[in-house]
Length: 136
Image (tube, rainbow, N blue to C red; front, side):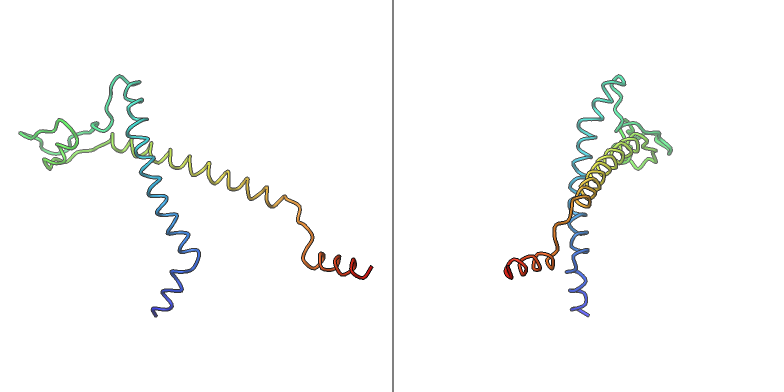
């Protein structure tokens, strides 16, 4: 059973998938930083200083509790609907999906270009040519 597991893990597809997941997680952090640190502040400036991270609706009883920010409301245990965080997550997803689209599109173009490239002579054809040249 251990040898079967080792053979499964060492297959190329599993290793490629693992590398893809690790790189994807790192890329996701880059996109999150891009959204949180660059795009959302620009959107906030354009919309007159709206901070989307603190856009929420209090759903539960907040009597006597500090609910001035989303983090404080969650810390106080108040039920909140954090639609600002949801908007940020949607923007993250759209950026990530667009970048993946661009990568897949470029990969498809490269594969199509390599498929269109003329194939050279096969090994058998080359050996036949060499044999014929030696006979002469």
